[in-house]
Image (cartoon, rainbow, N blue to C red; front, side, top):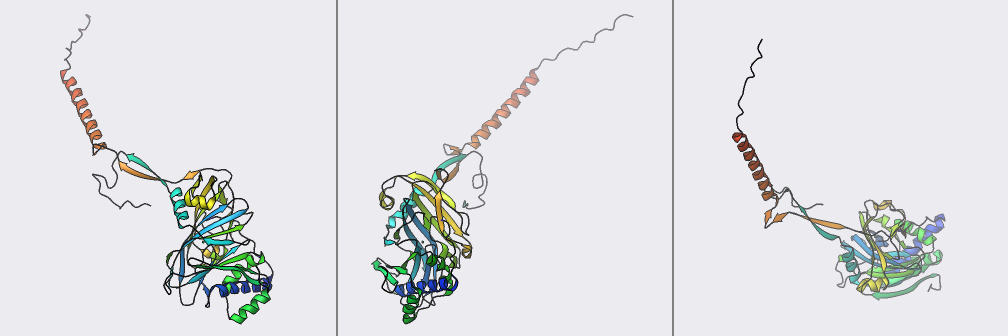
Length: 378
């Protein structure tokens, strides 16, 4: 996932809160036909589902392409729970286009950034090698309407019902929502207030399995969003609503190596790959044919409530490449025999031969006669 600087908390007191409340209500009213409440949140936005059901986002994996003016995000969520349908809301700084992403994209990026394997030999036996017994198993180690409240458009994309929304007039929103009888939990309204104050737009996505009534579970098809931005940003603020630890994996494609401006309240982002690539296949369709620098990051949020903003990226000081290396170790052998055995045997034989030779030389050494020198005459 990409990492970007967090947005500033807006001001405006009660008016800003009312605008946020009304905005979120219209999002849910358009996307859901039932009263929704927030559940586990994902970095892409707020995940909501119906009452008396559960929904957990185990991992959020995204690819981000930024060329200096336009950002593209391909997002894939792994979910589990009892909810037969759900929705998430993603704030974006400018109007976004939405379509289905290529399921092969993130798999190809996984392969590119996978650790390389190198083999090493060791001489002396370790645990698990003869004559020692093993002591372990080897395991190490997401056009305004007439009344200033509207749907830019709404479309069906595979299993997703996608609406792009705008909202400028909180009073009009409130009137529309009151007529439809929707309410929103205060936590999500508060989390959305900074986006409302900055006049962002929103992508609301309803998820539903192919079989009606079947709980949403497993890895969902990716969605692809595109929007204009001069600074690459990956919305994460709404993840602070999550009640369980969150995990984020992000692939960032740009002209140069990129780095997050801050950890935004999570563990320090960990670089798992950095290098210039020539895009092929699904990566080429996503990022374009020109060579790009790929930076892959993993980040954990043990306490999501500490998330204090969005992720922003900046260019790193140098395009330093990095790739993980996974070593496999094996005992050095010759002809199926551990080399240390004949080596130790040969050393022992050499010592024994040297000792025998030394003893033989000592036995054959001639005896030198002893003569007493006579005393001089007095």
